[in-house]
Length: 364
Image (tube, rainbow, N blue to C red):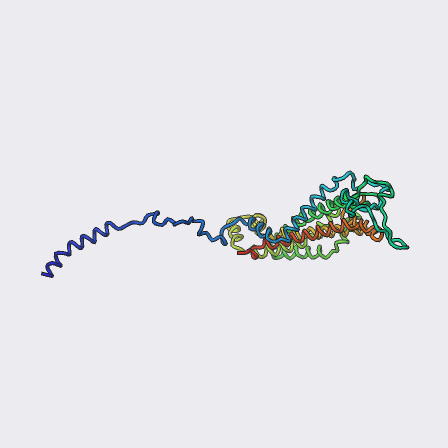
């Protein structure tokens, strides 16, 4: 009986198994819906895709010294182009009756500072004088004082900063173009081409800058263009070496080999494939070369090989103030402070850009 009952149940159980298989549940999208969260909650923000330049700006802003440097650069640049027209004086206007007047600023003079008083050393000691009162000049104000020819030092300082900035930026951009192209071409072709180009670079680097400038001044008229040309002929060597080193590092990469395989020309590979990948070191080197150009221009002007009178630069202003340093020290202070702040600010900005543009320093 048991065996027969088991045989009777077998067809019924097999029919149930077939029914279960036919009614098997198929999952739907609603079964996988997130409960109380969105897909954005599961994105790893540390490794989220971001624009390269946005990351550069974010890293630059985190470096406070670089931000302060950029602010000072913008402020000095603003006054360099706006400062000369903030009063009625010009950089070349002379008035011998108003020479050697100490700084005097409206409103602030009532606080006892910048009121036109000056301490002069004499053989009997130090005496305090105020030429504004002695010459009866109640409505005359020189914010930075006047020089030996009665010229406004405020106007001349910012005019000189303008000239120095134009020379430095123009020379840095030209040096970037020449040095970058020279270094990229030398590193890309290599071999005999690289050897010949590097020997030429060593010869150019071995000639003293002062000799080149002196020879240029004997041939060309002294002025802004002459100084830019002199800086152009001497300051591109550093940029060339950086560009060549980056090219040697990248020219065997896969994307360069792929471009060469697809038939791209050498110029296309150099300037369209490799150059965008080394823009960080190039920008950093340009920012470092600007304060160097400012100092070089100031040195040349200080020794009398710079901007001819009546035009002025920071270097020529320092040279003029140096002659009166023992008697009227206020005449040398403004150009020295402006040049020091300008060079320091550009160096801080360059240091911040170097860290922001270097992918190895990227914070995860």
